[in-house]
Amino acid sequence: MAEERKIIKTGTPGLDEILGGGIEEKSITALTGGPGSGKTTFVLQYLYFGAKKYKDPGMFISFEETKEDIYFHYLKFGWDLEKLEEENLFTILTYKPYEIKKLFERGGSMLRDVITSMDVKRIGIDSITTYSLLFENIYEARNGLISMFENFKKWECTTLVTSERDSVLDEKSRIGIEYMVDGLVNIYYRRQKKGRTRAIEIVKMRGLEHKEDIYTFKITKTGIAVDTEKNIFFEV
Image 1 (cartoon, rainbow, N blue to C red):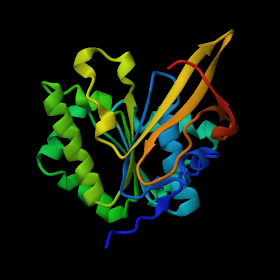
Image 2: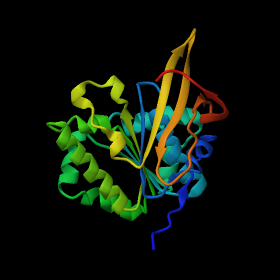
Image 3: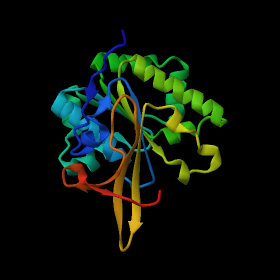
Image 4: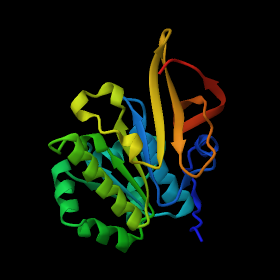
């Protein structure tokens, strides 16, 4: 008999509704988009509300920002990530991409130990594009990412990763992330008329009946909120 998996709520207003309820536990979901689209904020909001509202310990692996910068920049939303870390509900690991590559080449035991000791349920990674550039070719990059994802599933974590969308990458950087993950979410930050519009599209979400339209979202004083009443169309 197939294992029944529960649905993990993201905690982001409107997002769970268009996802089809949330995200399937022990799955890997990629958020793709260009610079400034809100990918990192989506991931940190998933971790913050997971810890704050659902008491799911979370881990954020950053290749690009320091722990101090993350604490400072996201406090503007009222997210006291440092306090959650003191309560053992959240941790930030900052690695150079080559360090995490070596870690997984050795089996990832150091990472596994942190996950086990904290009973981590949610993981966020920013970004796998940076990580994939370490490999000599696309084939090795795909194998490296698949190995990483398999470990997170084995450790029973529900993982969100950010990735630059293929359309903004050169040919050598296109790894086909959509074929390696259980869920794929596209985030847009498009210029329209005199301003920019932020929008989100659920491309696939394995095991769930998700919405197929493109919805606008805003970054407010308390974080991201998806407008489930306002779906839009533009060429992507």
